Image (tube, rainbow, N blue to C red; front, side, top):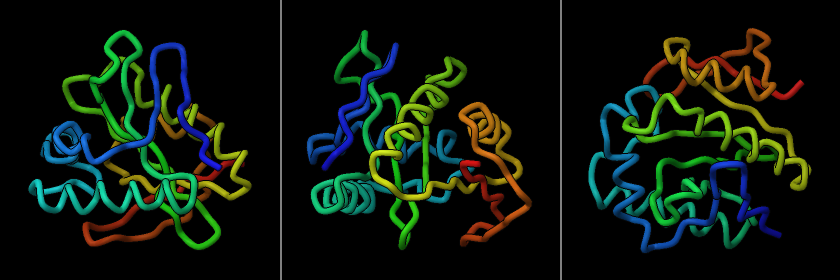
Length: 164
C-alpha cells in the first residue's frame, strides 16, 4: 500500500519515475542544496542509481523518497521528501532546492510525510548534522524531539530526532 500522492496546502508529494532523473539531479547534484546531507549525488550515473533504488523501494515496500512539487507549478520538482528504510524503522529525509529555500516547503512536506507514516505502522526518526540549523528547525516544527542520541555516517556525527 502506497501512501502517495499526498496533497498539502501548497504541495503535491508523489512517487518518482525514471523520467524524473533531470529534476532529481537538479536537487541532489547541487552542492549548495546538499551541503549538509550525505546523499547528494556527484553525477547523473550515481543519481540514476539513487533514483532506481527509490523507485524499487516504492514498488516493493509502498514507501520511499518522493518528489515534492508546488501545486501552482505541477511538474516542477522543488525538492524530495520521504523515507530511507532501516530494519523496522523509517528514516525521514527532506531536501529542498536551494533556490526554493525560505518558503517553508521542507516543513510542509516533512509534516505531511511524517503524518502519512502512521499508516505504515513503523517508527520514524531523522538524522541531522548539528550544523544544519534549517533542518533542525524543520524537525522541531514537525514534532520530532532529540534526546541526546547520536550516530555517524561517512561525513561525521549526526543528531537523532524521534517522534515522541
